[in-house]
Image (cartoon, rainbow over all chains, first blue to last red; front, side):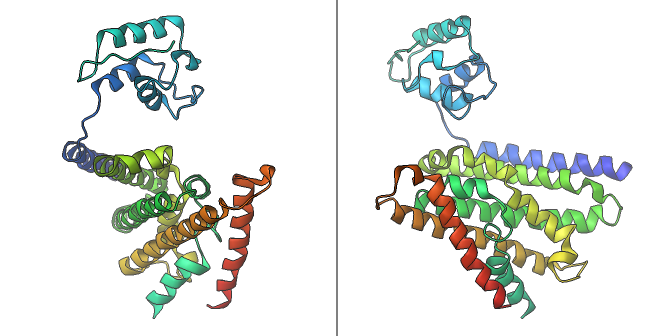
Length: 101
Length: 199
């Protein structure tokens, strides 16, 4: 029993350290709005919008490729909050996203 | 000599896709372009080789002496998932075009049964793979894992080359895409049975 606990803790901690080191060493700058939109989407990763997962949907909304109503689990409240968010936050060069509802 | 036999058997005779039918999801999903198929093969090669070496070390030196081999599946999956995460970060950092080309199939390497299959075959089922040898050496396991993953990369690359070539020819509409790809895979599997006669 002790061995099981020690082993699982040791393996998890070693792998976690490896991954956290890698995430710092291999960090990629991306649009900070992507994560904010992902947080506002339902995060069920159902794929009903036609994109593979909510993160892809967020990127697609930022590229003006997808309409917010494609997100089936999302309600009117979610669509309005994302629209308001994007109307307040332009990208680095000051351009606003034309949100398709 | 024994190592050559293991490598040849892993690449051709027991080919992971066409004879064991593991890992068919990315085989059909990412094989429409040669370049993305090759990078998928390389990503899988990295994950299979390193996760098998680490799984082997954990199994031989910790799980087996302490008689807790029932933990093997969960520990192996943990190792595999971490390596896939590492590969994903690496590819995202150094080639974002490749990252979007591989798309959802990259995190799906975690659930690719070829990876867990090799890890379990070389440890728990090692007597079946290495002809009754219950305690294979690290060298044998590494060669086997490398062979299996090279077989995977070879077959997915050949398959994508055939599919790329085939897309230039007129094919009946209801045979386009996956149906004709599955027929191709079937014919390739039939051809690979021929390697069984060499050993």
